[in-house]
Length: 466
Image (cartoon, rainbow, N blue to C red; front, side, top):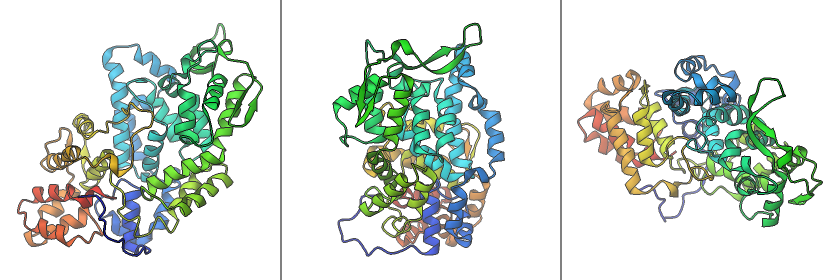
């Protein structure tokens, strides 16, 4: 069982050098690749973290070249995506498939692992469902989430608010002064900034919804010029009456009022605490200490929502590199799948069956219908009926029964070529580096078939944790 024991917790302590490297690679990356732990432990995990906090300095040329070949729609503008969407069915389906494939390939192969981990956080915080915005989510991923993940929260929030994917997903594109739609205004406060019941009332939701009337998207452009698809402000649809949004008076001045309201929410103390709490839950533990949240909130406020500095404050905190946060979270299905693929040095030629496996596990990429996004808390993923699909995935992978995917030679050869007496130790070293689970190692030593042994280790409670 993965649930924590009711027994008294052992005293909290700092992590050893090897434990800290292990912790960083499982929490700030989607798990280590074979033999990566020893390298990070040798150079020091904080040096690795500093590199990861500046992803632009890490060479991902090989991955980018593959994405250019396999996922060409990633580089298209909104207008180009919309024109492609009007074409044949195969072209329309390709846009969605390439987005999901790109998300998976980046998570598995990118050298910029923390970027992929943190983009997954924002992908759920600012969730959109690709089935409602099938030809817009690709641009949203590239130009909102990935572009602003290391910038300021205010810029990320504004980019999200003005992107057609969000405008359509939460129905603001049809919000009109004669028919105000409150969906986006409510989620903007409840999910994106302040948090539920945190310093605002229904009157604030209604006022914000009126302020955001006319924020829409579509084909637009100067008369006689070429039209472009994207965000625009429809003055005729805008409610021009004065409004007050969470204490901010607005005169009814048009587009600028909506921008002022969003900036006000981005810099609100309630937003600092709400976003900091979510980030601490994601990176440290499901129940992060209040003292950590307070310190991180202060960094968020004092840096005007500088996300890189906020991440750094969490990662370099004593609470992060402590025994209580070590292996304290349970992997989501996406995190589990990617960590399995990384640990086994998997070679991915196509991913359709992997997408089906994620569907069975309850986390299809970009298909969360609820605006909350997928949860990263363990209680959401411990249903035994769902866990069985994780074990099935492990068995299929080691048997090379997943179409388009195979275990890499960097993993298979050390396991197959080790002696039966050493094989269990080798599997532990490759899949659970730094772990001290003697019971699991003994259980593995009783299994003769190296592939079954590997699947057993991948399905073990220890591998579900990070």
